[in-house]
Length: 200
Image (cartoon, rainbow, N blue to C red):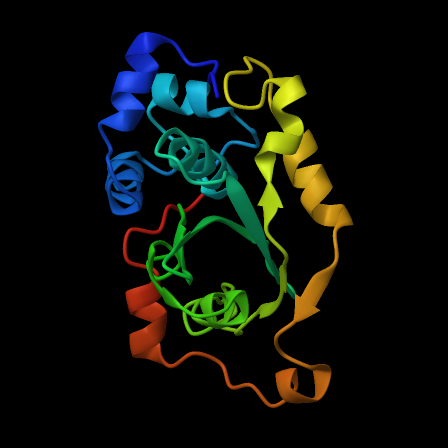
């Protein structure tokens, strides 16, 4: 299909070559804390991104490389959601992500199910009270559903994407009885998870 990027943008995106190449590019971008929902075009131009924007960019870059542009939402208690771009190679799921926490980014395509992929984020998913907070995950959302709105190249914020993620069903990873028995992070895990963290 024809994609709405310029020739220069397509060269840049195709030059990333693989899902891991997309992740390496995202890793070079500073994490920003603004309340924005930039399109992939704006991320390319501004050279910075946060979690949501990194995932949307990842989905668009995956599409350029021939993958479906899938997003998956990870939902937390007493914490913010984390959005990841997911891809599948030979039946196994991996993920591309941008995070303000050290252990919530790339996942190799080794996970047989989306539940396996989602639960891999559990150990590093915590809030600033050291509580382990990941609780649910969504089904993958194919962002091609928003093509008519120009989500890949819009100059306006694409808030309709996170708004849609809030409306879809999520599958529980951690039942309430189990959540009550979770321990807070130890000092070593806490410090390692905050490597590179940006504070407001």
